[in-house]
Image 1 (cartoon, rainbow, N blue to C red):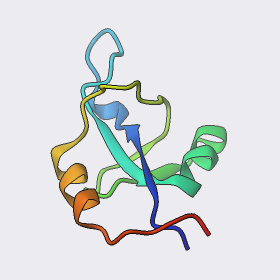
Image 2: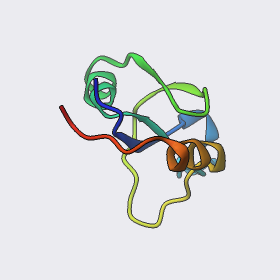
Image 3: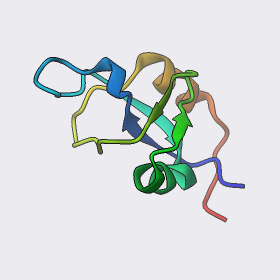
Length: 78
């Protein structure tokens, strides 16, 4: 099981122009599945949402997800 995570957006936190306010960390193996099937993912902070956007460099990250991610033990892809 991989502990690597990637940021993704919680679409409930979007502005009127559909620009995400903040991105969340979710399990890497769930991102593609959610993007294809529309299933929901659970972020490290507990937010639940379908993956609909990818972050760009410099995008804001959920502070709670960042805190949890920074405290995870090192891991790697298996």
